[in-house]
Amino acid sequence: MAESTNLLTVTDETFAQQIEGAEGLAMVDFWATWCGPCRLIAPFIDQLADEYKDQGLRVAKLDVDHNPDVAARYGVRSIPSVLFFKDGKHVDTIVGAVPKPILEQKVQQHL
Image (tube, rainbow, N blue to C red; front, side):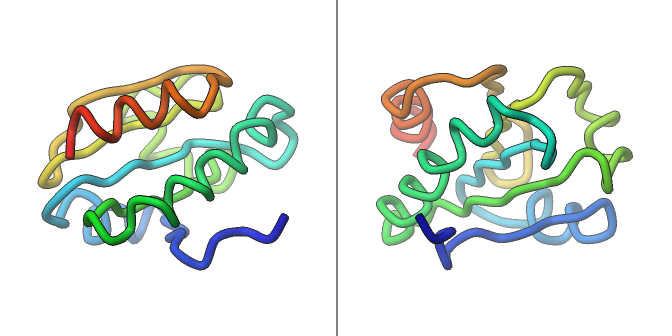
């Protein structure tokens, strides 16, 4: 399955502008290439990016191996971790490979 074109790739350098400086809801997937559970939820992240783009959801991925500063700042110690930001403020976190309905419920809760 091809990755959604509605996904942002964020880094330690771009996170403040693209996520913390953005209005509305952002969902950020903290992941790594070697992480099996991260690969399990990746299709759900892609689908939600497409399904909720018209409602203003921004979806981003941050590779923790290449961007340790943001992961450390938000206390990400286990991946996958999906963090939710509303108007630039961290409002929720889901840790682990969870089914799509769990992720979708959080999106709907914060939209």
